[in-house]
Every structure is written in structure tokens, then in C-alpha cells.
Image (cartoon, rainbow, N blue to C red):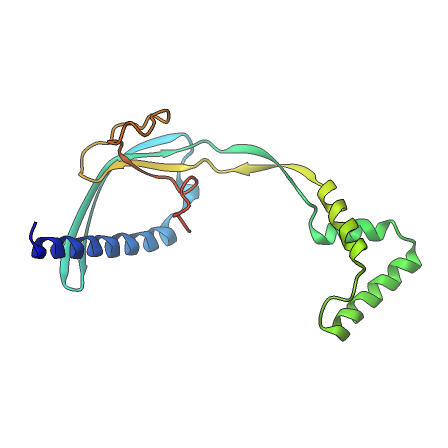
Length: 183
């Protein structure tokens, strides 16, 4: 390859990166996830043409958009701060409770920072927090995957059991599994 061919490839790659970055930003704002029905699959042929700094670039994709099923997942978490403070206050008599509710805000206002607390009390509180976990069920949206081939040809379904031996798998975008996806 000549130097000029390599330079042209670099320009094409930069233009493609700009095109997809712009598309990603628009898609992030335009996507209404609630409009995607769970457990559905759609064949998608996408052709994107852009003009970047006076240069035209075209890309096409063909693939399958798969929307997973919503699920319920059990999670455990420490209680939220107001609930935890209310629980602790409920264990105290009314006079002590009123004194704490009046004095703590004044101490914070006067110091502008956390009041001094004995280290052994902090350690005890940390231990207690590790032991108080509430269990609840949360609804988790099904993931959205797009398995595609960037050459405009239909993508072959991915076999999740395929190991590194199969290097000719189609590209896959999955925000749940990719650390590069930041939306």
C-alpha cells in the first residue's frame, strides 16, 4: 500500500468515527425504550449517509434487533439514610430523640463539617451496616441487542458457546455487556 492509500484509510476511519459518534448522540436522545415490545425480533437494514466537513461518507448495516423479556430480580441493599435514621430514632425515648434532632443540625451548621466521632463507634456502625440488608424485587428491562454485519450482508446468529477459535463472528452491540457503552 502506498502512503497516500494509508492516509486515505485514516481519513475514512476518522469520518466513519465522526459519523457514528453523531448518530450515537442523536440515537441516545431519540430512543424511547418503552416503545420497544419485549420478546420481539426485527430485521433491520440501515443506510447512513453523512456529509462531514464537505466530504460524503456512506455506511450500511444489516442485522437483527432483539428485544429481551422484562424480568424481576431480587436485590439486597442497605436501607436508605432517612429510613435508617428514623429506625435508630425510634429506638430512643422522646426526650433523647428531640435533643438529637435539635442538636445535630446545629453542630453541622456551626462546624461546616462532620462533628468528631469516636473511631470505635464508626467501626461499630460500619459493621452494623454490613449486617442490615433489605431484600426487594426490582423490575429489570430486557436487554436490546443488535447483531449485525457492517458489509450490508445478513448477520449469522451468534452462538454464545463459540470460543475464540471462531474469529469470523458478526459484530454485536450490547450496552449491558460492553464497558465501552456509556449512555
